[in-house]
Every structure is written in structure tokens, then in C-alpha cells.
Length: 341
Image (tube, rainbow, N blue to C red):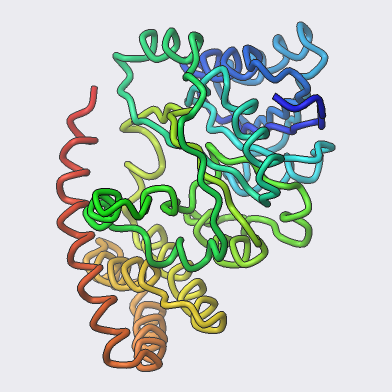
């Protein structure tokens, strides 16, 4: 690890996570890299989460707690960004667990490669695996054998998202998996200035997707670490698993539309956003409360069709093929995750 010890701010939005929150905070406090500012944003939790946050702050001066009225994860993330003093910023969900070398490895890769963001691999786990994952994370991952830096992350974000093609690319020694990343903000380390002028849109379910395009456009270089440094709890009660009304699909649709248009303006094929956009349109059409949102749906549908017409025939063909490949992969993935205990 380099002798440079810059401050890293870790932002954790907290809402009704009393069962899992200590696992998350403990894994952050146990980081091998200790120059941390840990910002716990209590988003109006109604369980014992606020008291848990305060108890950790009383024990460790690196822990800072923000209590605010409930406004959603975007508002909590924004509050954390506004309060952050670190040169580098990371995020964690309040029920996930960080490998003890998470920040150390991410920071070393970022600094040594001159990148704007570093990222690593993650692993999903079920509630029954909490204690096992806690033990594995405490032991820590071994130093990675492969670290890959690449440019034009917006292009990678939009085009490298099908698992089957990533596997084929790796078989062909193209190291394709390294160029994959999604909209999630966890398991990444950012230069703080990347967030200057960018905040998550509040009141949206797809707040991370909405900022993805603009955020990745600001990055000159991203570095990938080939080891698992983050454990993502699969909980049936999460927003991603539970919200299925029209507004949920419309938020994802709006994010898809926005990123599609942004990618086109940057000369990048918006394949991922095509997948998001078409999928959200289809899902919104089957929402139980569609009738009360019909006019909004029709406007969005017309906007999507207008954007698709800007694609050439070959571009549209690639988008369609990738979408169908991803749909097959998603069906397999959903069965695996829904059966995770």
C-alpha cells in the first residue's frame, strides 16, 4: 500500500436496518485502511437504526451521523455527499458487508493507475449466510492477480453488459469482464470531484441509473480489481424486490430515456439503455395502476420511439440482439436470486 494516506469518506444511507446494520458498520470499522470518515445518514428510520448509528459514533470518532426526515435513498446519499470531506468517496448499502481490504485495494489501484474510479467484484448472499460472509470478509481477500485499467467507461457501461459475451471475451483472452460495471455505487471508489455538480434525483427509485451516464462521461480512466471485495445481501423486502407499481417502472423508464439520449450525444451505442428503456416500457404497460397513468405512458412511449429512430439499422440490430441475450440471462439470474435464502 502507498504511504499516501488520503481521507476516504464512506457514505451509508440508513433506513430500518436494525437487524443487519451492525454487520455493515463493523465491516467498515474493520477496514485495513483506517483513514476513514464514515457518514451514516439516518433517513428517518422508525426502528432502532438511529440509536445504533449514535452508539457507533460514541465509540469511534471517525463515525458521523446525520439524522433527517425520511426522503428516500437519493436524499440520504446527497446528504452524505454534501457532508463528505474526503478526497475519495465510497458508498455502501446498510445491509451489505465490505471485505476488510475493500478500501485498501480500491485506493491502491486507483492511485497507482491514475484512474478516476476503481471497482471490484461483488457477491450476492442470502440472510442465512450472514455469519459465514462476516467471517470471510473479516479474513479478507488475497491481493488481486489481475488489475485492469481502461478508458471510455461510458462505452463499456453501455455495451459490455451481457454475461455470456463477457465469458466469451475472457475465453478469447480479451479480459472483457474487467470492463463490466453497472449503475450500482457500492464496491467503487471515486475521486470526490467527479460528484461536483452531480447529485441523485430525489424521490426516484432509479436514482443511480439516472446519474450513471453523466458520471461515467466525466471519467477518463477506470481500473478494475479482479477479486471480490463486497457482499450484497439479497433481501425480499428491498425496494428492488418489492416495488412494482407504475411509478417504479416510470422511474426506470425515465432513466433509460435520459441515458439513451446522453449516450447518443457522446457517440456511444446506447445498448444497455435500449434494454432498460424497452423493458421498462413493457413492464409499465402491465402495471396494475396503468390506467391512471396512461397519458404519461403514451408520452414516454412516443419519446422512446423517437430516440430509437435515431439509430441506424445496424445499431438497432445490435441493440435488439443484446437485449434478447440479456433477457435469457436475467431469467436465469432471477431464479437464482429468488431462491437465495
